[in-house]
Image 1 (cartoon, one colour):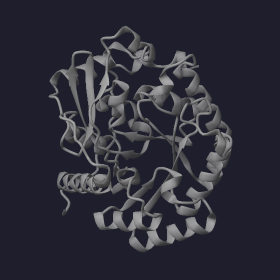
Image 2 (cartoon, helix red, strand yellow):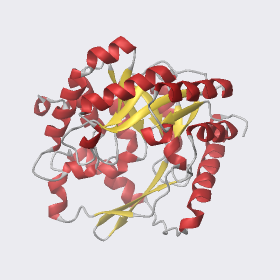
Image 3 (tube, one colour):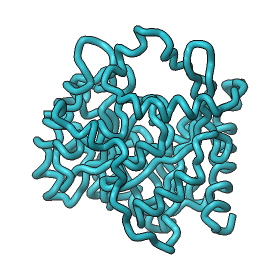
Length: 344
């Protein structure tokens, strides 16, 4: 099924241009941005409101605190009082992924529980993902993980549609390039499956985020946004995630294109600042995990690295981590508001 996909056809074939909108997109926050805060769901919402967000993305159950009906209803009521829209998410739904937790039940059972909570919270989506870059390695090829995820999605289709929900799969932690996630969505059914477009994760999959956007634009329902820096090293390339405006991926042109191709879709900041991570693509063994990556895709990523400058590591003491995450988010929120022409 997946091997008959449109790998070659996607190269150089632009996505049909959607009508541009003059309305600024809704600004949101993915709570992973302040993951070390120890906040309750209500404190998360208060912090987001103080930051000027109109949407909060509970990307994992731990941020929501509980899936119990009464708790979710209280969270929804607090969000309504603050004028904040909610999105609800979970982690891996691929039963063969290294990121999947079988202790929580089958993938279908886990998805069912989160869909119920999402419905109660007024979320239009349930965010989920396949896995991480580790699923590109090992005896089971990525295509098999994709097919297993598709099976879970198809089994959950009627329930999602009964609830009026879309299951939104994220390009997560280097698991899939844009074209691969597009294949997954089309194989499962784009009538009930969409994409959470993350601008930072493509560089962990050897992909220029602009390529990911072009591949997934027709299916994007929401977003996670952060900047990245890519540069050359003797073994290949180094990648770090940065505050907005501090990277070299062309985040300004990325956002302009996103607004053009995905009108009305929110821009939710997921700010994670990391030190450099090495991708040693001059080593032959490295390519075992990327054997299906087209040359034209890799060439654009390599060009980013050639043009990039090294970014020094940042040392943050453990007792300062919470404060630094909040600062990274605040600085990035100010940048985004300025970029969109809003009042900081």
